[in-house]
Amino acid sequence: MKARSAAQVLLIAAAVAACSSPPPPAPRPSGALVTGTAQVTLDDQALRTTNDVACESSLSLTNITIGKDPETITIQIDNSKSPTAESIAIDNVGGFTGTYLQNLQGSANTSMVDQTYKITGTASGFHADNPSATATENFTIDAAC
Image (cartoon, rainbow, N blue to C red; front, side, top):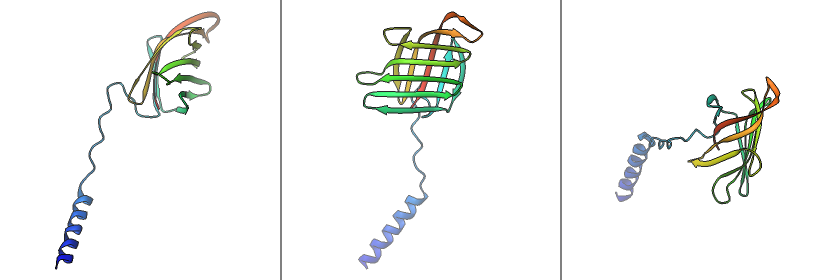
């Protein structure tokens, strides 16, 4: 009789577990993006949100590529202490091509919300419609790895 009761309890427990729904996913923190997406703003103009984000990590470095040719952004971040952008190459995004190089050209502040890198700063380069004139652009890049 005990074996039969134990079997019935297990069957009821399995049936209840099968009918219950999983808990809803935890809400994303404010400013966090869905993994594999990015938002880019150049010169205070929001350009796009894209799902073309590739992240590759090796030791303390993370390389992020946003977009596809001919419009790409390539970022290298050092995570050894706190996230720090070492370099950013903006290639023909919104008609602008430019770079930020840590301690050499431009400026950048990097932070992280959940799995989203948030980088704001300036890059030096040129605009496609006037390639002979040097231009400096403000940027904001949010990329979720």
